[in-house]
View 1 (cartoon, rainbow, N blue to C red):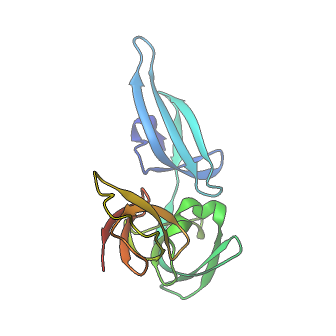
View 2 (spheres, rainbow, N blue to C red; view 1 turned 180 degrees about the vertical axis):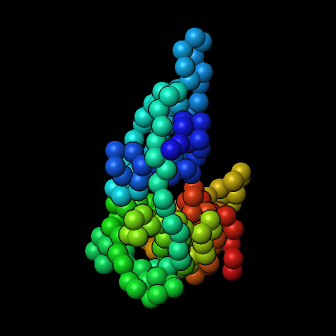
Length: 186
């Protein structure tokens, strides 16, 4: 069992019968009262984020989440299809489960798979991925005062802000946590 002081960002716990991951926490100690923990937890089955406040004496069951490697194979309507790297079995996750991570999934990308009760429930992307720019508006000559950016479209369909020198065909490194441009690879 996990006490509220054990609930750190990234911790997995069972809440209302479903696995959740803590994505935000703020611990506060009230004068004569007990401590409370304001938190945001993400339901790993549905992708829903819940704001919840725990009192000092509450305990949660720790979710037994296992990690394995898989390769993204293709997207079919609202399903993302993967192949387990150890046993080559295929499985699918819905776009609700994947969430915004789907914007950076390209064919052949290796991801960490989170499983609960031996069932894949979510993925974790590498921190940075290399993607090709497929559309980039031309940069305007002389428009270079300050950090000027433009919106470019990546091979996965994601739109990001990138510096004005980026053009179609360039490979760029993207931070998958923030969705921001990091650097031009080539």
